[in-house]
Image 1 (cartoon, helix red, strand yellow):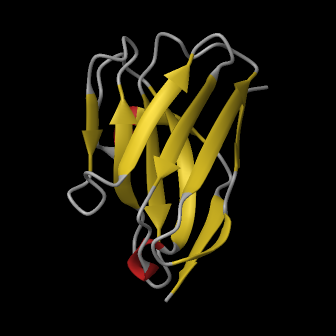
Image 2 (tube, one colour):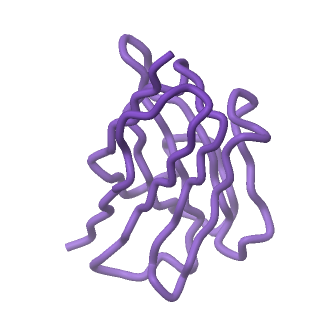
Image 3 (tube, one colour):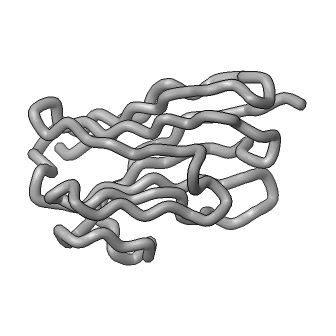
Length: 124
């Protein structure tokens, strides 16, 4: 059974940092792009970051560019999202997802497996 399990969320003050992890089990995803999405209260889920299977391509939402960094450790079947300079508007449930393809994509329909999410709350 394939599972993606996020961790690392929590409550942090504005300007602080958090590092999210997403551990995959049940199969290896070294040949798949991996992404992070988030859903803020009262809003639809939105793209945050993606990393291609070969690690060459990484894309970020404009709202997080320069503050968030996504990485992956294929040996551990794990991806990470380092979030710095957090803002209250970053408050959301963060989801990791495993892509269908090797290439980086921002479209939710290009992702096959999803984690349950981890809550990030940024206080002002």
